[in-house]
Length: 124
Image 1 (cartoon, one colour):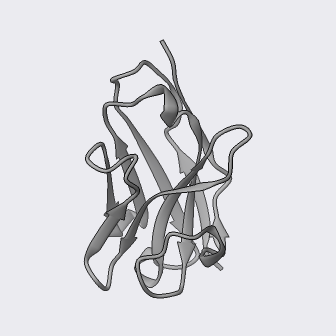
Image 2 (image 1 turned 135 degrees about the horizontal axis):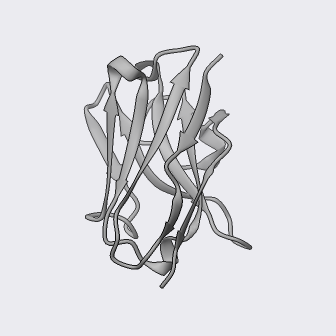
């Protein structure tokens, strides 16, 4: 059973950077497609970025492409989301998720393991 714990959220100003961490336990992250999602109040949960180890590919939503970067540390069994040039519209609860399926997954329904979320607030 894979367990995920996010950390690193906080209150930042527009243009600032922030790095989120997702520590996994129970299974190695290399067995999964790992992804980040976010959910703003009153809105649906949306895909942010994903990483497919077997394809050596990371992929992002258009709204964060060029500003957010996923990475991982296999030794720590942890994935990261480096966020730069943050905007007020990036304010949301950010979730780490994992899927044993294949492909460049973007749908919430494709992911069966979720963390509890970490809040990111971008405000001046």
